[in-house]
Image (cartoon, rainbow, N blue to C red; front, side, top):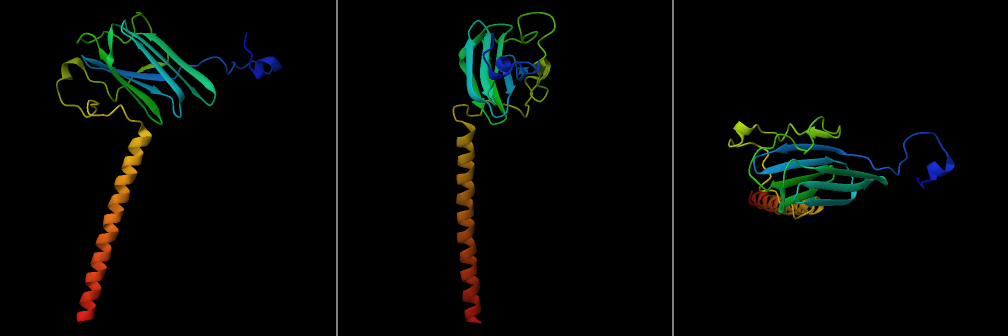
Length: 183
């Protein structure tokens, strides 16, 4: 039984806010890894649990509403080689497969997948095209730092650039003034 204030007051019959919801999860694969993108802007209290047998568990809150995903993946994974990056708009997981092979589907159960699971066509590569260079490669992405730190570094670079441009502008102005004094 729910203990939220809406249920206690007997308000309209809309679903209770205390029940967890499922965010949209997009997926793509390569022979050695999975890409899972959880689309949940402004997520708070993000928690992830991966199990070597192939279990993916995610939970977070947004606007005090809990969101959860608990799926049994098609095959085993390498937890220690997997990475996560929590962004402002989404959470990206790069999950290493235990065996280098293409999976027939994302989840172990056959049949229709849950409605919140969708193919990520932006990252998708066909099995025969895997060896070709594709634009979306996350191998160089640093998943150890948060997006705030990346924005701070970008801001620092911009600030340094502006500083040097001001110095260059002053130098040009000084040269211009010295040419005017000579004339």
